[in-house]
Amino acid sequence: MPRVKLPTILRPHAGGVRAVDAEGTTLRELLEDLESRYPGITQMVLTDDGALHRFVNVYVNDEDVRYLGSLETEVDPGDTVSILPAVAGGR
Amino acid sequence: MPRTFVCDPGPQAAPMRFDDVLDAIGDTPLVGLPSLSPPGVRMWAKLEGQNPTGSLKDRIAKAMVEAAEASGELTPGRTILEPTSGNTGIALAMVARRKGYGLTVVIPDNASEERIRLLELFGAEIVLSPGDKGTNGSIEIARRLASDDRYYMPFQYGNPANPRAHEEGTGEEIVRDLPEITHFVAGLGTGGTLTGVGRRLKRHDPNVKVIAAEPELGDLVYGLRSLDDGFVPPIFDESVLDRKFLVNVADSVRATRELTEREGIFAGISSGAVLHVGLRVASELERGDVVCLLPDGGWKYLSTQAWAPELERAEKNVSETLWW
Image 1: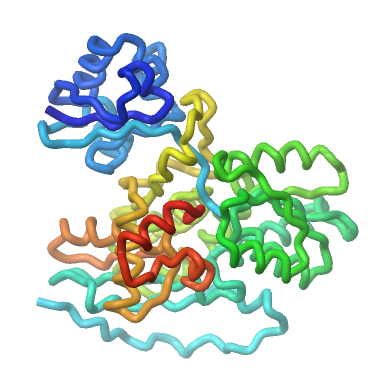
Image 2: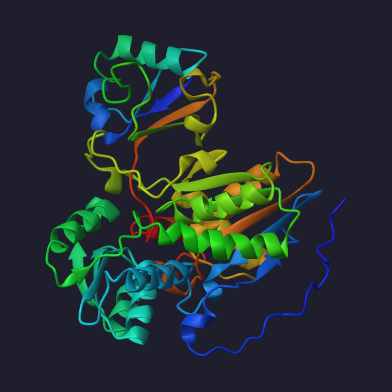
């Protein structure tokens, strides 16, 4: 089952843990499964019309899904999915 | 088969004599990485640490200040104000000194000691922002200060002179030095480098892949940040990117050390993140020319102990500072 690493802000939805398992062969399925296990957890990740929120970055094995297949990105059982807020870098 | 790095010397080298230090910005070396290149692929590093204050930010500091002078926004007597965790501040401090402006920088209080010392020696006024808010915290404070008319804020995150400096400078130099480039990897901060260089490279050859390395900053910076108040720099044109990778501190430190150990290149920690992504991309290729843009030299990171003999200690030390 793919592992999902949660940002601090979402951890209270999952009992405070840093990472949880979720089922699905695409990112969309995986987020749906996550929502069914921890209601409300994807509220800040997805917009009202079901797209990825502009200020959220989701990575499968460290690669940003926006440049893969977005929510249709395929996810394998051994994969790690990371959800992170978009933060300014640069110096 | 390892590929040769020997190249045509090309047209006669540009003269290396300049009227002042600002004219010595840019035209940085592009060097091969023969020890790190996998078979069939040539890895290259563009050494931005060779700029006068030791980072790629010299390019945008000069470009932003000169654009503001030309538009009349920056006039004698005004003070330049910028939120920056270091390199942009140091570059602006050099430009401000040369041109006679004052400079105030807002910098997170966990920036490395060398960066703060350098800003001080160039005469910049320093305003510290809480380190746990990262660069976003500096931006918030700078925006408040900027309401005072004394200040002119170039704001590297929203200033079109930033990507333009890279399109007309950095990108142009890469096309000139390596027209056969297939992949370009750079760090994602303001988005200026990737946007500017990416635009120039895509115009040269639409098949060139433009790839971003993004730091995984750790819980300290992400903190309890709401996912609603994120920040995507206005100048960042996401359409030029083909791929984007997240890189953690440990992988960045390891690759930074590898650069020194195997190629004799002493670069900063974010250069390690870029190299880590470059190597990952190169490992998927049969043939290619991969350019990694190394933003700065290692000098400003010595106090982080990134090159300490024990790798674990090095990783821990770096993760406690603002390494990006």
